[in-house]
Amino acid sequence: MSKVEEFQELRPLLFSIAYRMLGSVSEAEDAVQETWLRFDASAATPRSARAFLSTTVTRISVDVLRSARVRREAYVGPWFPEPLLSDPYEDPARSAELADSVSMAALLLLERLSPLERSVFVLREVFAFGFDEVAAAVGRSESACRQLLVRARRHMQAGRPRFEADRAQRQELATRFFDALTEGDVGALQELLAADVQLVGDGGGKAPNLARAVVGAANVSRLLGAFFPQLALVEVTFEQHEVNSRPGAVIRDRDGRILQTMALDVLDRRIQTIRLVANPEKLGHLGPVGDAWAVNRELREARRRG
Image (tube, rainbow, N blue to C red):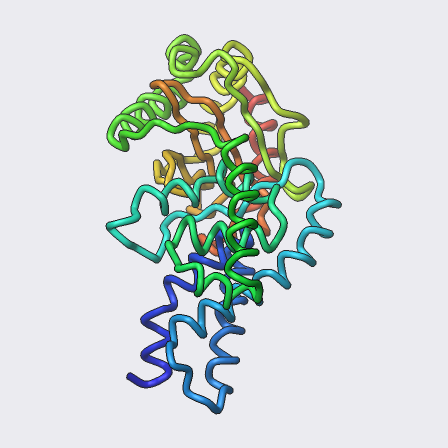
């Protein structure tokens, strides 16, 4: 195959590695593009295009991650990964690992790791690279990579939430949740929520957002049941869709522009966490983005009239 053909064949894998490293679709796409430029400029033909490209995208992602951490420390409010509606890389033998590793909960846990620990964990634990490949990618010995993996696993297992394993059950619960949300049925909502459920939003100071996390089934169900049905007054709609391999929705204005995404963590047939991403800078890869501030003003005016 030509270089272009080899790269295009491996592009889904490269993006999926970079996204798990960075938690950002735009930064992952930039890392993949930079990987192509280095591959194309290389005079020598690598023995393995997969090894060369995965090593290159990993090292670029590590550099980006180190600088991104400084920006995230100054971020306004909670920081969530950019929502991903579909993972381009598929491996039937590792579908469960791939789905779990791209959830928002898992990506937030990965933020606790050092860049090298994160690299080793993603390459070895998620994509099943051999330790020789991992060592070449991160520039460490195989022994050092094994130690990095032990530390990474310890951090991840200490905070890793359990999820509802049955996808059909998750989706059935999500459908009931969004039906109750649309109708403003507070009682039905509360039955679907875990006692210690959390509702958390990421607006980054650039969109209307919760001032702080809302905790508890009664509090969350009252807030959701009171607010979300009113969005129909300004023709805001919910499009049920998996978000980061978990049940969720894309919320749009009357012109179909995206206002925010919602992702649900489910365990024991109850919703444990609801994460909203409203920062417009994190939504542009999904399509045209609406003006959430304008929708908010219109909603307040509609309430006054009503």
